[in-house]
Length: 228
Image (cartoon, rainbow, N blue to C red):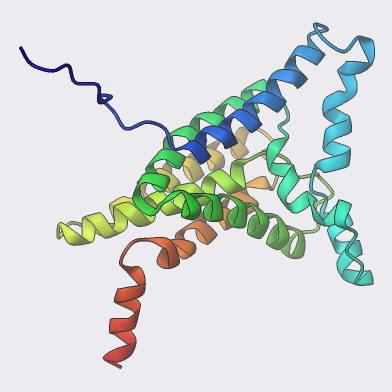
């Protein structure tokens, strides 16, 4: 009689990915229930707008901090906190799905510390450069710049894999090309805004960070330096 196999058919979700998902989803569940009138009473309808005001990222606020060289912790923390607030249930659910799928791939390929670094640094980089480059008064909210950073990490993994197999590496960028194409099509018919700039910056940051965090990259870098 064979011993039963207690190993799961697929690898479990990394703990850091699960915790981030629960944070994003938990906030959205509370806000959605409040807007539906299930919790919080009549005043709860304004919770989402209050969170955006208190924790969303404002380019105008950031410009004021830079111009005056004053960086209050409450406003400085917006470069991180904006990623945890979304405009609505649909806005949040797509971010959560991408986080689970891409976060699992990146964490398994590079480790959970790398996953966290790519997620948060990409979100911060996307917001800061977005504020410096554009003069858009619209507030930035949502995890998409951070998630696009994970797309950058995923693209790097595929880029290296395709190189090892001797295949065309441009295929590694198929996902970001499709997403940017959809953004372009959406912008033709609707006002898509400028958040895509922060998302594209997040992607570039995630891809660049992968040169630091991907296994074996430091060794490759040392070899290149040694041979120059």
